[in-house]
Length: 171
Image 1: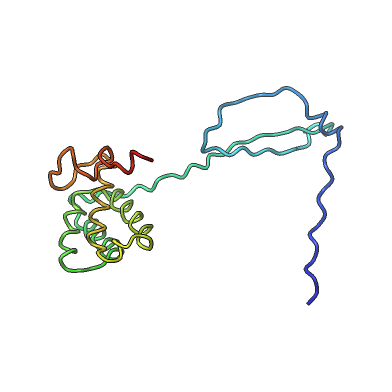
Image 2 (image 1 turned 90 degrees about the vertical axis):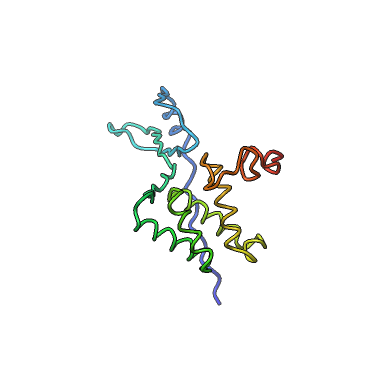
């Protein structure tokens, strides 16, 4: 087979005249956050007599998806129960448990829990052997992380509260 084609040669570096013509007043229009991307371009001046360096910033922060809350909407509750059973599994005893979860917690909390469940599904043996139990533990933990109480009273010393998780405190 013939050798692959060579990539095109790199353009020559800008001449020192171009670099000297770029020196000029620096204007600053605001701070960059960690979510911003700075884009720089070299453009010809409108007068055509020289070049200018133009900066632009764009915000790359991802907008969080907003999910509707189930509360008393039977359609949303049914949707959440379906999402959980589809991801976790559909044993009859677990399906009856998922309905109160869907009524009690926001869709955002449940979707976040499903995401964490999927991440750990392949690495955590507990997730494979007892997925319903593992999902319930995950949901309990995520609910406390999101400053929500668990469905049942679990107290201030609940092991799923972030402040009581010894492993988290060591990291």
